[in-house]
Figure 1 (cartoon, rainbow, N blue to C red):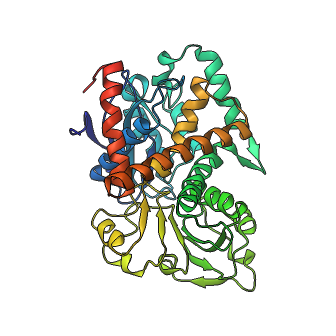
Figure 2 (cartoon, rainbow, N blue to C red; figure 1 turned 90 degrees about the vertical axis):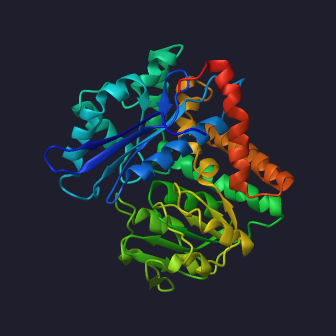
Length: 392
């Protein structure tokens, strides 16, 4: 794949902090990709994320669906989201990016930001919506916007549907890999890094599927219990940033160092927080059989062959966490309605099919799931280009 179509760095005139936008590819003149905010965010990081979005969109291409995948893009802001300056900085960034968002970049929540916050800041920046660039592609804009608005209003057990579908997709990816290996749910142990939107929903779906969550990590450290954690109690004790109130812990729960989740006695490891969490050094501590990338780019490229040599299978982010993005478009374009059960069923069906194709391709090619996913993308991009033209 060639380099990105657009890459820019923005410097805030008040704080000197930087923000980034990378558009990797356009399809029908539009690209999709969220906006993250974290201290230390870099242009290289955003470039990799934008490339990943191109892959996620292509992997969900179905010629028979109403949703036609877009191109890939990503935004990033180098700031701690807890900083008092974070929200005004977000508004100024969106105001600076307004021409791109109005014309070809659809964006939304990512690491460090919630959709509510993005929506509020977008309105303050003078935008109609953070996804308004896609509106000209809709058959009935008013009906599509109503459907998406109604879907965002749906709650399941007090949690918004938009916060749950991504975790549903991650869990289904893990469950499909277990089924592929003939491993039963009962007795399978899981450790997660991150209990925010993605990590929390993943923990809930895996726990309800019969797996045992033995460790979770947040910004304060790792909470572990070899007999299994009470996932619902931990979720209820989270703050807005996914940090668990330690007063909610049970007598058997232990507080461990922040990186103890890596070496937890678990079969499935789910990094669901930051990028670059697993590197060539700390990968040696992992004893899990599967790493399921709920976060974007959590396993560094140099660590993956070392993990593979030890029999650890990495299910890549471009497949595993693609459900959230796809759900937005399935709903907006009308493949599904504003209904939780329909959303979960469609997500499970799509993710199961995608993971099965990826694993079958990996087996046939004698390669890793990530290489297999990239091969599937390489097959689909020319087909999409032939149908919709090239915007590079």
